[in-house]
Length: 167
Image (cartoon, rainbow, N blue to C red; front, top):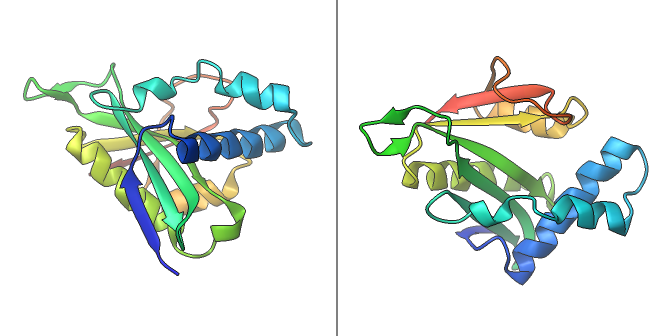
């Protein structure tokens, strides 16, 4: 089986289910128990996914063996400096997720590559992200693919580690 990564709107049926699965997993880890349907719905309410489309961002869905199996978004950072009077220099990675059945198949690397390409198309020259201490698999993936820990650039209850990579 192989991976196919493609740009997709964040509200298509496959993208919506992947975003839901992402929230289910990160909320369940945060709470230390399975997240309730209400908690997941709350996480998806006004989560800013509408900004993950041109001109402010992009969203990628990965299919493994034809099945929706991964997703992620890039979002131009409004506070980032402007280069050449055109686009913000930095984009942020968000909602990076690979379904459990497809982990260990190279999908994380393929997804990061597709997201980096999406950020470049938006004019970004740097990708940044924040994550939590307990998301060790994600932190390992980022480090393996050239993302380095940086000083905090955002605040929030789920921002515990910050990474960046020059494109």
